[in-house]
Amino acid sequence: MDAGLIYQLLQEKRHRRLSNSQNTTHRSTLPAIMKGYTITIITINLNNQSGLKTTLESVVDQSDTDFELIVIDGASRDGSKALLDQYSTIITHSVSEPDTGIYHAMNKGIKRASGEYLLFLNSGDYLYDSSTVHKLRSALLQHEDVDILSGELELMSKDSEKETWIPPNQLSFDLFFHNTLPHPSTLIRSALFNEVGNYNESHKIASDYEWFLKAYLSDKYRFRKMDFVVSCHALSGLSSDDTLKDVIKKERYLSQRSLLRDDIWVSYQKLVDLEREHALLLSSRFVKLARRLSKLKRLLFG
Image 1 (cartoon, rainbow, N blue to C red):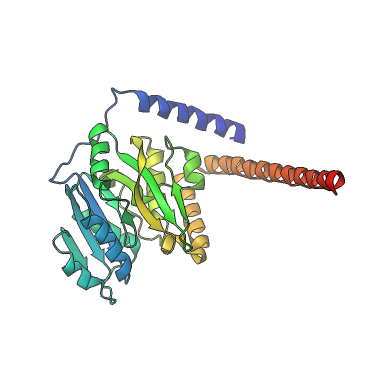
Image 2 (image 1 turned 60 degrees about the horizontal axis):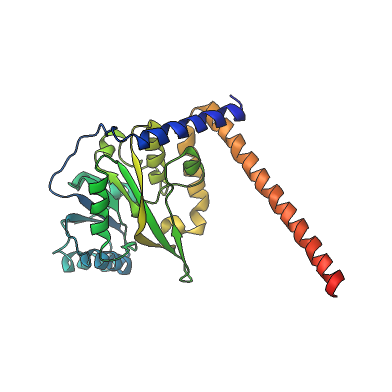
């Protein structure tokens, strides 16, 4: 399968998904599993007392209390466990015990959750403002048949510079070849974990990427963009560590190869390479143009 054909197939799939999203008669095949809460917020933590406090404070501040909060602590030794007692009035379930990693802890939270939708807000991440849960519930009421809803995520660098990640209008294969959906600002219908499966605990840092890619490739679930900031994420966590970029790249590669047919992966990689070459060519042309303009300026104005 050559690059042109795979591009045509991807475009056809894109138009098919767009048509489905505009069909108001389509309903999700997943049953509602209302067990008492609309939203479950799952927070995992390991020796990050200050980050955990920031997260819990943002939850305490919510004007809408129709949610449950589950905190999974990995037997921290920095005083985090004391915070679980301090905030016990807002924590529905908590546990402090050893785990094997991020996704083992997140899967523990999934197992305990009773909400129809899950939001993973790990220690250090925090809800944008006091109306966030209210806005999330309003979005769910407007789009009851949607399975994954992703909102904006405010990113803060170590130098306190802010940048806002804005979700796409619709999911695409291109998104998952270059990026993913951020879990701190994405609601996932909890029933999807029964169908797609839980997070792959063999991965250290990119299992959420694998999960979203797997859900997307199934072509079964409806997605909706939310046009407001859901949460904030400081670029100092594990997934933001520069030393782990190679790990992230490797785990994403392994996920792609395990979920995609060889011919599709190879053909799409060719498109990625062509895209990269095109970008480099444009960059080279702009550099040459800038040099010519600079030379012309010197000739005209000295």
